[in-house]
Length: 472
Image (cartoon, rainbow, N blue to C red; front, side, top):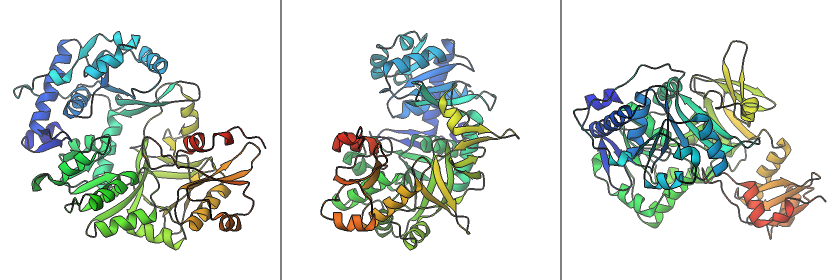
């Protein structure tokens, strides 16, 4: 980023949904100003800093300022239970807290946050073009970003560690496999950060995927119109709905990468029609290993259709940077862009991480994967789901003509079909899947993060809560 800001300071680095823009030079100047203020107050390489900032220029400037001085950026989902946040901050003991007014209000309830000695509002920092960003030479094993997203069975928040070396390796993998266009439309924050390291322009989407943001992006001048897009299937569907309903055009898009959750073949096919000149990639990966495999989405859909699937189960072919190992517990991956062990001694490390005799770290994807004779990875359900239930779901989708349904096992192993549009076709469903204990119509709920995966427990709680404790 530092090199790009020196070579092309006038190039747009970030365009935000508010309409605010920042060039590479402006972003570097703001990061240098934040860095100088933190150093003046005593922040040093090796220290950690908690960030609680809105999605904006100040957030990215703060990440750049901290990482370039060898500090660890700590990110915590604000809706985690207070006692969990209190516990992890008490262990981490961040030296600095970078926050907006909302962050100050949020922290007022948490004693460990109030105890952080350095507090800075980056929004009040004044960029100084004469201040150069200092880039420290640090140990590549030093944590660059530490993200706490959810709790474990033991009640301790899980911390995903992205070391400085890992982030550089992931940047190389992004560049060789998912090279963005000169102007990249970003739904995921980590891709926006990668773009800053690649010298690309990032058009940032707001978290609400608001109609206002779509309209503003569609009306951008030619130099800022997105030429590439990285998103999940839920956002792709929202984009298609917007182009039809509002008549907005995004014809500059020449490449689209879709991942994060299984994508229906029909959704891809609609996108191929809407953007006939764009190249679509189907990407398989996870938070801890991104990407693992990819392939041309048209080929993935064709293979999946030939196999009789309504979902794009043909995931792709492994990127050359990873090694794969298929076990009963699911697919394990190893490579330079696979995240290290989770922070702390958490149960997830025992379940999802292992070190082989040669010292290589392996991560469990948690997915049941088979590989065909052409080296293509095929999804066959989560490792914890019986293979028979996954295959039954695929048969059900063929009867329903959609994928808004799933199989739930009660406490004695009885198989229930739950989903939308299952009433009125019970005879066909029971003929296709003998032995169903019951069929219940309920509204399918999606996960909060991707908005694409079926949240099975939430769907049951809201639509058939009596099933959770049924014993017979």
